[in-house]
Image 1 (cartoon, helix red, strand yellow):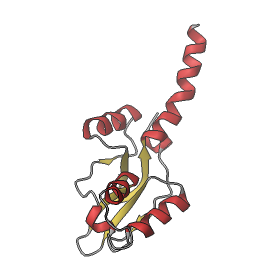
Image 2 (cartoon, rainbow, N blue to C red):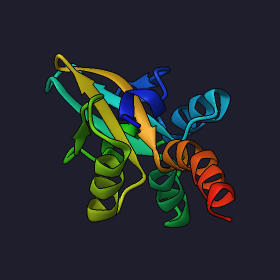
Image 3 (cartoon, rainbow, N blue to C red):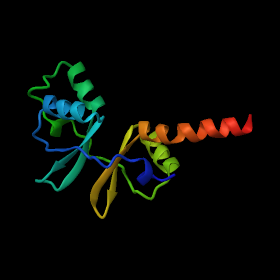
Image 4 (tube, helix red, strand yellow):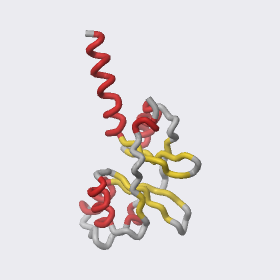
Length: 133
């Protein structure tokens, strides 16, 4: 199975000036664990995850004044839609993260998460176990 089959194509995109509270509200409303942060001044893409928000709040920082740009990961590993789920899982495992921005023609076309991969693998693993039993 390929990344394009598992990824979410509803990409939440925010700007670096969004507060963490605004970002968390948008992520919660969309029921996603990450947002792509697009900085028009640097032409760069980054990712803000629920973990980034949690770490900031846990450190006593205010979600009303802290901005997404301050907590964005900019050293991002991007996935290609034609990657296998194994390749995506390997990249996540190696990098220690749970989300990959999926890029095609230099544009974000989706996000694939560990949850997406598990959702795809779990039914086939159950079928395989049933067939071998």
